[in-house]
Length: 224
Image (tube, rainbow, N blue to C red; front, side, top):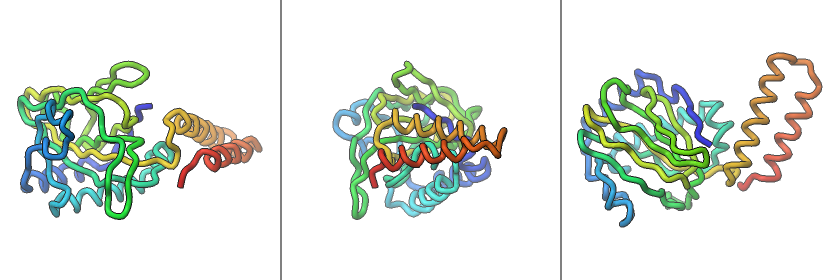
């Protein structure tokens, strides 16, 4: 399930983040890739130890925690630290898989979901589309600055070559309380149906019943 989450960062926050990243030291992105992915990876990244990456990584985590749509969709349990990449003219990332597990201080994060937050307005660069292969086919994604795409981490994906300008984004992985994508999708559908019913018929007793079913399914499927 691919989910577009608008305005994780405001356009002003995205511009401030880009400005801070522009002043930081970029390194070859292949340094963070495995041997197979490194053969098709051609971009630049900010090391996670850099103060700018840590500052804006925390700002992104705070923004995600404050997003009801993100929390309801992802049901997040643990995060790998947000990272930042840049694609300039001619740079690309060929089709690849993400790692299944990420080591973080004191824990291991299972990558159930991957996310990209676009930081550059789409009119400032050509190419650079995030292309995701999922059960519904091939999806091309290029979003406004500050918007996020959330997708299953097992999906094959790639970044098309940039032909003008530069594409800057943040990306991260997370472990969900509910491992299976299909179960999370059912919980999202049930939660949205309950919210719609609550808006249209707030006194309907079915709302309480639907909420009970939602929490019982979450209790049954969650891993904490």
